[in-house]
Length: 179
Image 1 (cartoon, rainbow, N blue to C red):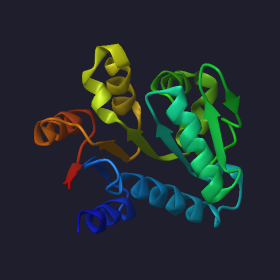
Image 2: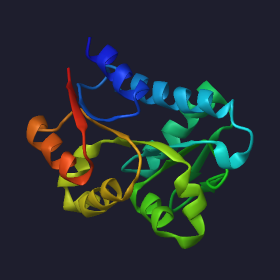
Image 3: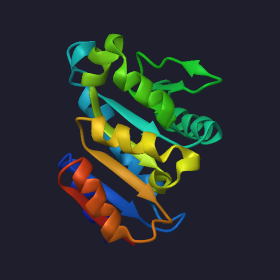
């Protein structure tokens, strides 16, 4: 039932904090979100009308893993930007990156046309917000900088209601979906 509620939230282009155990369907909703934006792009008349989904992950290893999964599902629609690797980041429909590089793109004056095309952001392992060792302050900044809905995914948020209230201070109307 929680997955059906979440599909509704994505279809309405709203934000959500999703707290569910590992292997319970958080990845499914991420791919559903990507698919929705890719379907919307099919009716676009030019590049400026297309949307982008950004998938933010805490490590380079996860970025590479997710990029392989996106490629297997949707083909060469993805881009990657990490410290060690950059591929098609400016022209992709699904950008997979780490918080540091996403923040750089959001702040870059030359990337603003691209930033305006962001339709959804997926923050995987969003509990990293609370961890200064994992750049929690960067996660907080980028959540407050984006001008689009987001999915914040985690299996380990300790107090989801309180965390959702916090996210609502950064962006308004964040739904809490728990399994």
